[in-house]
Amino acid sequence: MKTILFYAIALALAAFALEWLQFQYFLKLYPVEIYITLIAVGFAALGVWVGSRLTRKTPPQPFERNDAALRSLGISERELEVLEAMTRGESNKEIARSLEISPNTVKTHIAHLFEKLQVNGRVRAIEEARSLHLIP
Image (cartoon, rainbow, N blue to C red; front, side):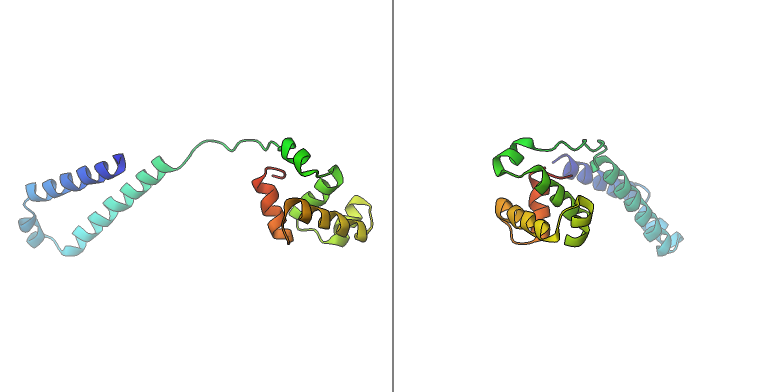
């Protein structure tokens, strides 16, 4: 409501200023392009100012893992490591190499993760894990 009121007052003041400056006289004195440029600059400055006022300037909070969700879903440490590797975009073979397990074990962990998170794909699993604050 404050923003709408601010714009209404700003437009009323602009209309008053144009009338006060005898708009008809100045319109004949200077080319129309100058007025268009002045109005465009005014709205651009107003947009930058409103954007800076409406944009949050708080620093991001440090990531805190939701341990309660991990326990309630029954996700093991190894499954969490596989999930974090999936988040980095690693393939099953790359995950197997980095965790020093077989690719079949990775597939088993991924299947368990899909079941526990109630999803049917890697992207959905990552989205669900992020929404539950299991991974950053």
